[in-house]
Image 1: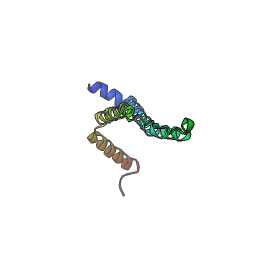
Image 2 (image 1 turned 30 degrees about the vertical axis):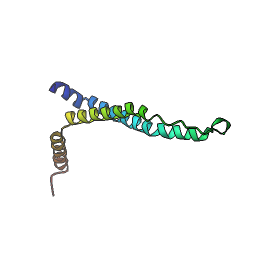
Image 3 (image 1 turned 180 degrees about the vertical axis):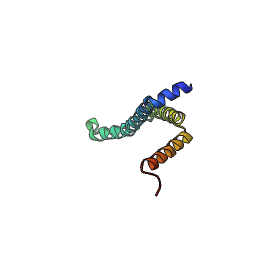
Image 4 (image 1 turned 60 degrees about the vertical axis):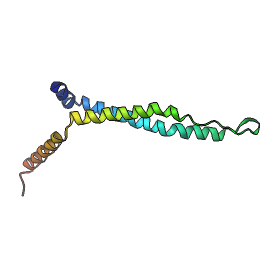
Amino acid sequence: MNRIREVLRNEYVGAVAIGFLFAQVIGIVISLVMRPVNFFVERASRPGAFGRVDTETFPWASLISPALNVLLLGLISFLLLRWLYPKAAVQQHAGEAASNATEESGGPE
């Protein structure tokens, strides 16, 4: 399992996968927001026949599946992010980068 983790981290495949999952989440959230807006805009622009009032309501239950999709994709991408890039490793990498920068500049003055 550590071998897979190292490959995903060092070859940037994991970063691309996480970015793709987060992009999917953003696209689905936008779709979730636009569905009711689109429904009400279309309904307002289309008057009923013969002066009849349109009583059609938005099918709110149709948003359950995409909402669950957002939650699951968000959870998977967050867990993948935490598994590939644990907090201690990120802080250690930041410390190494800072020490490398001071060494290259000739040390602290």
